[in-house]
Image (cartoon, rainbow, N blue to C red; front, side, top):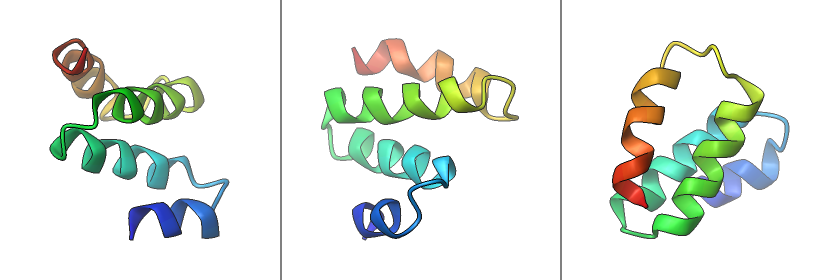
Length: 60
């Protein structure tokens, strides 16, 4: 479902973030990291940016 939302709303990076979190939960680490990094690149000062940055090393 998340993939479809990213396709339908390509400019909504929050959907990319959500897909990245879903990938992380499914242990698809590389796509999770790519999506989370794309979100952080677009919104480095987002309210959840620090939490995501802290989570990313665990996905590597």
